[in-house]
Length: 502
Image 1 (cartoon, rainbow, N blue to C red):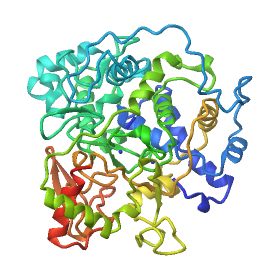
Image 2: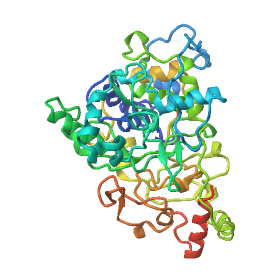
Image 3: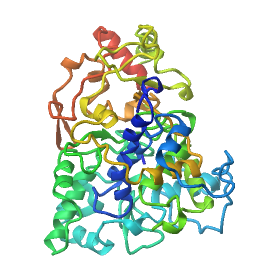
């Protein structure tokens, strides 16, 4: 659901809100079951895009969006949080994954949420475009070098308790259909061999997998579930990334799978910082996957009862970062000093709840907070294509017309979700940063050492699990975050050692 905007000062009024809210049209078409890029990749992108929406304050957006009248009582600010638990919900009858940070049944609330993270698509399989399970089992048998061992060649994490890998499962509500769960991009095998829940699976080439499956499906005489544009954009992503643009935008805008570490501690979530709590992120992710509708009678997939979704929300906020590999105590001590001297802590503060949003640099100049009184929060440079997702361009920039906008805004209001505008990037939570390479929003910098080098000294190409990332291609730019890049080699090594302990 896992790593899409405007400083409220820069928002001019309802017309700007209308442009931002336009991103939902493509999202709602995706939710409605139309052909789309397969995967949580597309759904995650639409979620990020939709969470940028409230650009003018709640009253302006509600008036502009023509939000339908809410149900009686839903004006209560806590109505969305105090839902009746509803009918009893059957527990997930699946064995847990042997992950280093898995919990056991002695912690029933987190345990149920963990199993839902691993196995539950919350009924979204009903709007899935995937071929049926038997087709995938045949692929494993007929082409073991490509699809064998639970699609290992594409970077999936094997699930020894099932015939399908982690995060790509038969639906719990309808086992005749396949669907991704949140675990597909957010369970990884760490360099030391541990399987870690919440870690981004940078080896997972889900885009390539989607294209390969579609080719076999079409070869058997079925209609393609990808358009030509969708397929061409998927081929440009490679492992560990999804497309953050809307389906119709002609240029892929890559974004890296984010980590899910310590989400419950944070007040700004997703890489733009538009989500304000885990519950809002989860609800919008489920909504973008096709679950629920502001008008329940119109929903193709009913919104899950609280007893099903609430444990999932709790688990999503509970996953901690993995402990890093051992480092030299001397280097770490010096690295802690460098972290302070280089003013890293001016943005990367100790309290995760205080990690804010650093605005986009309108003049391309990056600043620490308080360097310039005109930019008290500092500024950061970003790629042109990610900026287009905020401002739009002559080709639409991922911001189509208003279709579906009212439904999304109504959903936000009905469920009292916490979202807010952003004009930049959320400051990264550095806990577990050693395990989340490559870096920057689009995965364009391969290592921490490269991130602390001047942008023009960073690698222009590098291998990512068999895929060549070319930073000269549109959307792959490795510029930005030109902080801490003038250190001596010794201080850079010390700072990297310190970061690997967080």
